Amino acid sequence: MRLRLRFSQANVLRPILSTSVLKSGVAANILEAKITSTSGEMVVDAQVGEAELSRFVELLREGGVLVEELAAAVEIDPESCTSCGACVTLCPTGALSFTPSWKLCLDGRLCIECGRCIPSCPVRAIRMAE
Amino acid sequence: LTARGAESIRTYEEVNKRIEQGGAVVMTADDFVELARSKGLEAAASEVDVVTTGTFGAMCSSGAFLNFGHSDPPIRMKKCWLNEVPSYAGLAAVDTYIGATSASEVLGIEYGGGHVIEDLASKKEVHLRAEGRGTDCYPRRFLETSVTLEDLNQATLLNPRNGYERYNAATNTGTKELHTYMGTLLPRTGNVTYSGSGELSPIYKDLGFETIGIGTRIFLGGGIGYVIGEGTQHNPENRMGTLMVKGDLKRMSPRFLRGATFLDYGPTLYVGLGIPIPIINLDVARSAALSDSEILTEIKDYSVASRDRPSLRQVDYAKLKSGAVEVNGRSVPTSPLSSFGLAKEVAVELKSWIEKGSFFLSRPAELLADRREFKPMKTDTRRLRVKDVMSVGVPVARSGFTVKAAASLLQGRGTDHLPVVDEAGKLVGIVTSWDISKAVAIGSEDLPSVTTTKVVSFREDDAIDKVADLLTTHGISGGPVVDADGRVVGLVTISDITRPRARGRK
Image 1 (tube, chains in turn blue, red):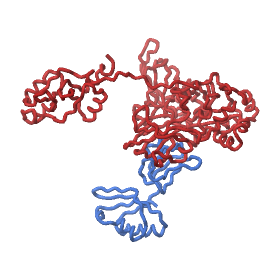
Image 2 (cartoon, rainbow over the protein chains, first blue to last red):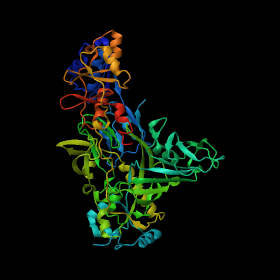
Image 3 (cartoon, rainbow over the protein chains, first blue to last red):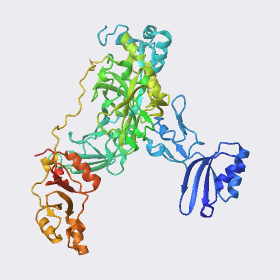
Image 4 (cartoon, helix red, strand yellow):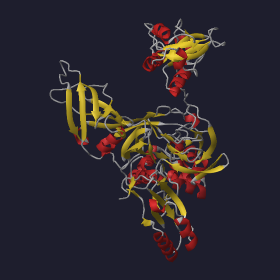
């Protein structure tokens, strides 16, 4: 499950993610991290069971982090997509791949919303999900 | 050795008779590869009448001839736009050719000729704007209207170069991401892209051009088309054969004609193309039975901005299709750019047409060249050098000069650059008219305060492209030319290298 974590300025100096990881034992993979003058935002992936995940989320929330579970971030219009594959190697997480019959498919659990695939689609069949 | 095109296993008449009777054995090329593998080539060749092929990829050298009929009062179009995409109007009054890569003057490369062709095939309205010169016979000077495919007299897809036998695979060993007609190439050999449909590839299934020739009836854009000759840059000896094809756009489908845009490169058209290969002799069968692992291409390094890009390795389509290939000792992921799914759909569709008796095979009126000299562009070999374009006898200032003395040297000389030299005449700096203005503004009177001492200078034998590169890199408009001892011998500026003389037009 991919989670978006939002940190307020008040929390910037506290190691909340590390603390939550250590306490829950959930190994979180940081996919994206942005820090501005007033806030921070991260996308992390934790491939664990439901109980462990909810403990991890609870710890983060206790630390004052806003946690949001992410669904598929991009959408492929099946009518428009020609399954050419121009996007496949641009996806940093392997979320875009082919079925054995060369149909393009998206694994929403792996998508991190980087948007690299969108402008590289020759027929503009990929867009950010609402 | 049989003659090229020999019908030793079956003739076109025999094949067409079987199609008519509903008994023709038709197989897609990938299935034929399997059959030949399991039953042997000769058995497969005697069993199968026709092998169907298919490809669906970006084919930039595509376009359509359109005829709009005459307006009243009539116009002889000298300029023409379709949905604001310029098309060629140097033809008779209301004929135009819309090329796939022509870009919209409003939307830029996001929408181009390929998209116009797709929109026409989709029966959408297309905005037509034209300008005429206004003649006694064609008085109208301007025209604006909307047309659909049905409104046109003729809409003929005519693609000068389609169906490359195979194409180079691409990678990028440089440090900068590249946006090319081979898609996005990630830096440091981050990916490999390739096109073509491997064992379904039309021309590769008839390597000797034994059945594909002028008049060969084909699947084109979802309708029926014809091969009308060799394509431009046809290079069969290098396995880079191409076809020129045409067909009636009115009978095509937008499923197999898709406008597309390659990021930071431009618009193009994805074309579905399928060719039926009648198994007329064993050589044709052998070619039709070639599998992905027997179809080879080269991985070229697109970070080298030259016509002769170095090849990093040879690779077969089976490896490319496996999702990763080894390049320089490292496994690199691969992306196709042509759709294998739609290529197969083309081959399957063509097979079904033949099976149900709605598509017959045609014997070519003439076979295509199986050998052809392939030439690079002939360009002017005389490389202009600095000494060909520089100004000589230019004023120079001594480093001890005052600003006023320097200003009076520039005055009336039509130059903005004043090289500064020492006692021996060697270059030590440069002052431009901007620096003089600056000196006036800050009230400085001695020249060194406004002299630039790190000077970009040139030698008489430097090529002018080097000058252009350096001027651009440093954001300057000119620089002094010095001899081996650093003495100023002239001055070269942007206007020197952009003058018609420098461009080879005396």
